[in-house]
Amino acid sequence: MLIVLGGGPAGLAVGWYARRAGIPCVVFEAGPRVGGNCVTFEVDGFRFDSGAHRFHDKDPQVTADVRALMGEELQLIEVPSYIWSEGALVHFPLSPLNLMRRMGVLRFAQAAAQVIAGRVARRTEPGNFEEFALAIYGRIVAERFLLNYSSKLWGLPCDRLSPDVAGRRLSGLGLKTFLIEAWGGVRVQDRHLDGRFLYPRDGYGRIVERLAEECGEGVVQPNSRVTGIGHEGDRITWVEIAGRGRVDVDEVVSTLPLDSFLRFMTPAVEPSVLAMVGGMNYRNVVLAAFFLKRSAINGAGTVYFPSDEFPFTRIYEPRNRSRAMSPPGYTSLVAEVPCDSSDGAWTDSDRAVVDLVQPHLERIGWIRPGDIVGTAVRRLSHAYPVLEKGYAGRVKEVHGWLSRFKNLRFSGRSGKFRYSWLHEMLRFGRDIVSEAATDRAGGRVAGTTSEKLFTA
Ligand SMILES: Cc1cc2nc3c(=O)[nH]c(=O)nc-3n(C[C@H](O)[C@H](O)[C@H](O)COP(=O)(O)OP(=O)(O)OC[C@H]3O[C@@H](n4cnc5c(N)ncnc54)[C@H](O)[C@@H]3O)c2cc1C
Image 1 (spheres, rainbow, N blue to C red):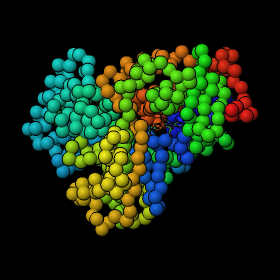
Image 2 (image 1 turned 180 degrees about the horizontal axis):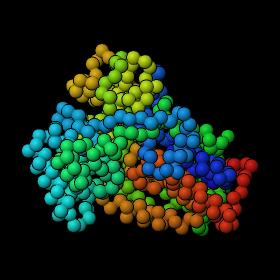
Image 3 (image 1 turned 45 degrees about the horizontal axis):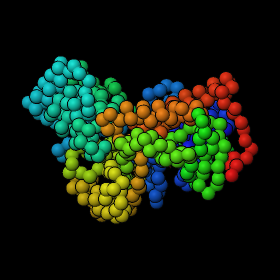
């Protein structure tokens, strides 16, 4: 029996591919519903996702699998994203042509000179995100669009962040693009189709709902919080579920945060092992949703807010992804407020969160108080693993220590401590199941199908 810890997209992906491979599997999820931080909430006929989600078509096999899973529900949509900068919308990803229009020719020429100088001078690997951003984008662009935004999102100054927080997303301002757009006057990114992505008609969470359905009867078990993980020699031997007892295991895939996993281990791990996860932190996100008696607001996929004057990093209007996200004649706006567990945004009342965000939306003219027909606040714990400088070495050290357990694998944002997306969760799941199938074929795992899950 393959036991999966956590019923977010990473855990469900393992369950789905396991079923396709004919490997018996159970997914234990602590909460009453599956999907983790990848769900669609429904409140009074309005739908909104747990953060502005889009499906990245990066792995052809995964995309084909998701298309087959979702059928007609999956739509190709085209909607541009923007950055709110000094009272105006600037294209995101950054487009030199658009920048030139916004900044004026002189300032743009200075910015372009910095980009070119950075490219020519760049010899050493950047040691932190600030160095990375300055080298690639130059000081004018980096300060205006990237540095504030990133420290607001991750909760640390950029010289303490790893260059990996760029998340392989900061494209579009390469030297070549700069030169072509500046001199040719053509927007290169229109050809890159950045605003096109796949999105399910009834919200992104439908993908994980379909994954859960296709895992098969009884595979996904909600209200099953893991509280203990037994180990002996080089194997994980049992998993304890609160209020239900212990399950003997052949193989385990954990998507739990690494620190939780280590703390659950019985016998307890040495303090020196726990110390390895000491510096590995997670960032939360609070969502403030405003339901509005307005037919449309901004026509954007996502709008990014780098400036410190706003408590949020992004705003999205769900109906711009699918008309089914709000009732006819109504729309909604959702703000993402990143925070730590000790911050007011996390601990204060829902009303306080609404009051924190609403004045800003009124000030920029996107909300009039009379338009609001309702609000909702949702809290996403462990939304981002904080990629502090040097994090990769710490993750390697922890996973290195855990690799002594021959029947244990890790997946997910928190399990791998990696800034990753749904298409990667699916790829991880597919690869893990393929390895599990090989282990079974080679007789390295017993592959028992126990009739009775709980033994004690
Ligand atoms: C704001 C935001 C925007 C995003 N945008 C995109 C996007 O545009 N495109 C995209 O593809 N991806 C996006 N993602 C990422 C995507 O949602 C994540 O990949 C995903 O949520 C992480 O999946 P996961 O299964 O690793 O973790 P999670 O979603 O965190 O799920 C982990 C699960 O484990 C459960 N759990 C925790 N402890 C226990 C325990 N002790 N016992 C049992 N269960 C437990 C939790 O309840 C949870 O359900 C975004 C994420 C966020 C937060």
